[in-house]
Image 1 (tube, rainbow, N blue to C red):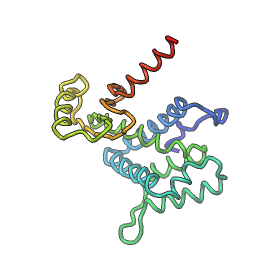
Image 2: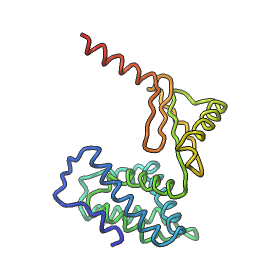
Image 3: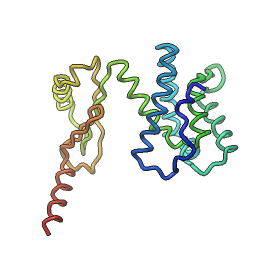
Length: 213
């Protein structure tokens, strides 16, 4: 198997914390990335597109989401569900295109090891590795309301002047809206997070007040 190195030990507990789960997902991400790139850059791009379709299917199709996120399914049900998922990715009629062996192998290994719930994390990790390979730096700016275009442009200019921005060939800036931040910004830059939100300051203030009582 191309992804045999990603197989977790049977002794691992199903009650692993989020950090451990993320570490497991990253192992699969690295395995599928290495398998695809060892074939060719074209294969890497193909697997990248296929995994994007998997992620979209999980988000847009409740039956696929339920299948992937259900840890109680029997081996038979996982096998049947996996066949359905792969068929949906291939499409139908004249547009039908077989899914690559690498993507099939990844999904099969996740299913066999009871790790389908890690699929989204695996895809996110894989996307980060592809972005690094292509010299892309994705920056996510989270705000309480959509930021005006001129503010986003100024942010992009500033970020391009940063050390990380200067190293990147392409900088992609995305604005996510989350009312819970109240105001200010949360900037996710690679593996770093800069929290300049009002909610963060309120939380810190509450902590200080509780400690003072």
